[in-house]
Image (cartoon, rainbow, N blue to C red; front, side, top):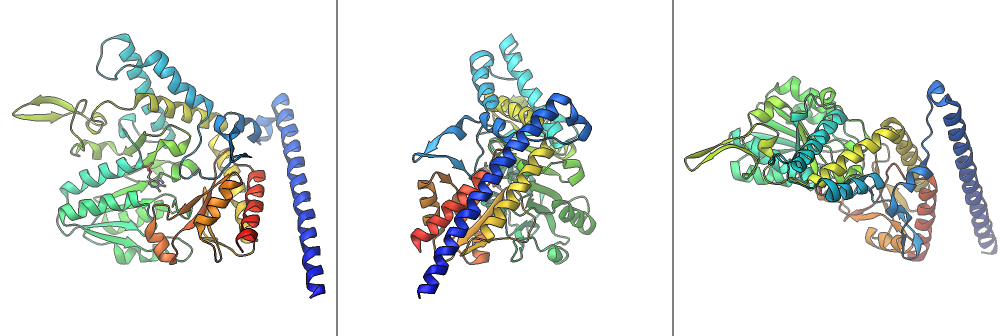
Length: 459
Ligand code: PMP
C-alpha cells in the first residue's frame, strides 16, 4: 500500500516536471521562431529559402475576441468548427460598408448603389478565384451552407423521376440529410446511405453496390464536422462518373472543407460546392453555392422575389440569368464585404502555411489526448482536418464541456448535428475540440491539462 502511494506520488511529480519542461520548450521554440521570422523578414531570406513562419502571436492580435476572458480565465477557443472568430479587417469592412457604402445593389443608377454593386460583384470574383471556379457567375450567394443545400435539394429534384435515388453518406451533417429527405418525401425519391467504418471513413468499397441506373444525385461532405474526417470526394465522384455517367449531379457540403483544405472545384470535378462564410473567418448569414454555369442555366429558381426576374406579368414571369436567378431579394451586402475581407486576409497569410500549422496542431492534440488516461479519440487513424472528437470513459461529454468552460476552455459537446454518426458509435454524443489558424500548441497543452483536472474531479 505504502509502496503504491509512493509510486503514485513520484509519478505525479515526474509528470509535473515533464509538463513544465515541455512548456518551457514551447516558450523557447516560440522565441526561436520569432527571431527566425524577424531575421528572415529583414534579410529577404524568406523568399530564398521558401520557408515562411506564421507569426501566430501577431495573427492572434488581429482577432479581438481572443483577448476576452471567460469565467475569469483567458479564453481558449476550441469551437472553431461551429464558427470561427473574426479578424479586425473583417469587422472593419462591415463597419466601413455601413458608414460609407450602404445602398441596395443592382437597382440604382445613383453612385452609392453602383459602389455597393461593384463591391458585391468584386467579392463574387474573389470567391470564384478562391475556389478556382471558371466564371464568377458560377458563384451564388446564399445565407449559408444550409440554405445552399436546401436550394439544391429543392431545385435539382424537380426534374427527376419518382423512384430515382439520392446517395448521401452516414457521416453527413443534418443539413445534408434533411433537405434531401424533404425533397424525397415530396417527389417520391429514395435516399441511399453510404456507410462509414469504425474509423469514420467512408466505405468507398460499397460505392459499386450503391450506385446504379437510378442514382441521380450524390452529395457528400468534404470534411465531416462531427469527426473531422477528410473524405476523398474526388475519388467518390470519379467512381460516380465511371459508373453512372455525366448526368448524375455531384455535390460537396464544404462547410468544414473550405476552411482546412485548398478547394479547386475544377480538379474535384464536382457540380456544386456549398459553404458558410462564418466558418471561414467571415460574417454569419452569408454563404456560397459554387456550381457549373451550364447547370445553373437550366435550373428553376429556388425563391421568387425581386432581382431574380427578367419580366413579370400577371400572365407569367420570366427569370433572370444565373447567378441572379438564385438570389431573390436584397442580399446581405455588408456580409459579402466581410467575406471579401476574410478572403484577402487569408491570402495575405497564405493557405499553405495555415494548413501546415493546423496539421501540426491536429497531430499534437491527437497525441496528447490519446495519451490521456480514460480518453477515447474517435477516427484516430483517419485523415482529419480541423476537428477532433473524443469521450472520457464513464463521463458524459456535457459534464466535461461544462467544467472545461469554467476553466476558460470552449469546446463543443453533443451530437454536432450528426446524429447518425453518434448512432453508428452507439454514443449520445462526443466532446469536440476544433482548431483554427490562430490555435496554438500552448492552448492545446492548457486544454489537455484542464481536461486531466476535470477527469480527476469527476472520477
Ligand atoms: N455542413 C457541415 C459539415 C457543417 O459543419 C455545418 C455547420 N456546422 C453545416 C453543414 C451547416 O452550416 P450552417 O449552419 O452555417 O448553414
